[in-house]
Every structure is written in structure tokens, then in C-alpha cells.
Length: 318
Image (cartoon, rainbow, N blue to C red; front, side, top):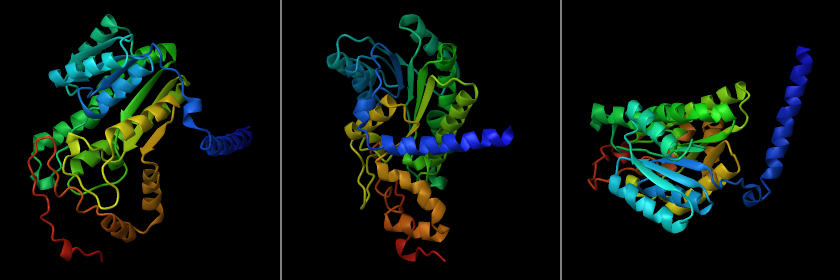
């Protein structure tokens, strides 16, 4: 019996592999699911990528709830969402997602005011952009609280309703920094690695519970041209525009993709790390400008962080 089950498992692996290859050639737009009248909750919805996603969901007929600590940013998002589709409901809530009690309270308000959440987009994020020894301890803690630990609170707040009806979608906006390390991003990369691990483990739990109607998607975008990464530079691949990234994320969500890398070339990172000798990957990182991309980083505060304390001419890989 066990050998028979193993044989069936291998057949299914082969089937899904072939299916994935064939679907690659089918335009994603032909496979989009409807989100009309669904309620979407987006954290970090007061600006940037969160705002862009809110507008796109509204255009597809979804009702939108945005959370942020920036009240004025939330108000702007609400107006833009209303302009995109005046027929959908849109509400905003000031919520510090690092406070789990406030997360649970605000989620309960959303359910009372609007309805249970159908799609959760964990989008809020912060970055310090400094070398490890220059990051204050409290900032490291904050990075993990916003970028990773908050996902536990938001998901626990909305998942019970999704499980009860076996329907819903959890979206984790991680980063390409969640698959490879980078200078001046020790806390950011570590928190994004954690977000990736959280989403993947949650997916296995849902599968193990046979909750096939509750979908999950992890998104690994390259650096985005928003205030969050102001000053980022790369000689090979410049920062991506928010609208492009938002379109790619929407395509992934609407096709129930489990893993979305933006741009697609980022899918190769883990493969290269696996097949290349470690020192060869170090040199590739150098060729791609990895050591310099954050040297002029200023972030939202506009202050240069003076991260280039390493003498590039003395860098050696032995």
C-alpha cells in the first residue's frame, strides 16, 4: 500500500510540473479569478505599493480596507480609491500593527463595520539601510515587528473566518531580500527571510488541514522606486516602478500563484545560490553591484547614512 501511495505521489508531482509548464504559456489574464464584492484588507495602505494595490482591487470591484499609522496618507488613499470606483466600499483605520492587541481590536471593528476579510495583504514594511553596528537595537526590533512578527497577528485575526468557510487569501509582501542577503540590510533581509518562512509554513498547515480554499501567496519584489528606498542604486537593474510591481502582484493574486518574484529573473537567485560555489556567488554579487547599491541610501528621512565604510579596492575573496 505504501509503495502504491508513493507511486501516485510521484505521478502527481509529474502532473503538476507539466501543468505548470503548460500554464506558463497561457496569458495570466485568461486565468484571473473574480474579486468582485470581496473585502480586501491591506496593511501599509497609506502610500506606495499598498495604495497602488488598493486602487487596483477597487477597479476590479473589491471592497477595500486600508491600515496604516499615517492618517493623512490613509485619507488620500481613500479618496483615490473612491475615484477609481465609487461603487465599492472603502474604509481606513489608523493601526500600529506591531501592537497585537490593537490589531485584534481593529480587525474586530472591520468585521463589525464592513464584513469578514476575504483577502489579507500584509504589505507594511520598514527599512533602516545601515550597517549592523550602526542600527540602534530598538530599530532592529521594530524592523522585525513590522516586517515579520505583525504577520502573525494580522493572520490570526482574520484566518478563523477563512477557515470556517474554507475560502480566503493570505498575501505576504516579502522581498527579493528574503532570498538573498545584502549589505546594509542585515535586519531587513533577516525579517524578510522570516516573512517568507512564515508564509510557506502557513501554506503547508493549510494543506495539511485540507483547507484547499484558503490560498496563500508570497511576493518577492526587487527594490521599488518609492520613498522607502530613496537613494538605492544599481548598475544592472534599477529600482522598479510601483505601478509595474503592483500589476505583477495583482496578476499573481488573481491566479492564486503561491510564489511571485518581480521581475521574473529574481526566480534564479535561489537556483544560483544552490548550484554556484559560495565564492563564485560572492563574485557574482560584486559584479551585480551588490556592495554599492545602498551606499547612497537616504530612505524616507532624506538623510544619507554614510554606509560606504568598506574600501572596495581592498575587497578580496580568498
